[in-house]
Length: 111
Image (cartoon, rainbow, N blue to C red):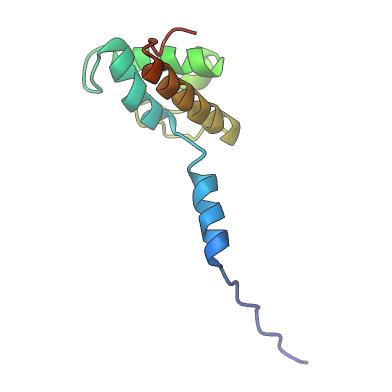
């Protein structure tokens, strides 16, 4: 029998750029919380009440139930389980909207 050599996968510059753009279209819950919960509530990640504030903010921007968000991990700041890509994309959109609101002088937690 003839052995078939595996085809080498060639990554072009364009493909690499597309992958980077696609990767940047997500924001993790911990990244979102670190950026916005501190600004909205004034709580630092090591402060008492930060985790609850983070869960409340994630509930507000994603529309998910508290139990769903808490299932992502025991330590809500680190999030052991990853949420779906749709949730990560929603957090990216919420991040972008908050940046626009901040630029306009509107509080990020106001809808």
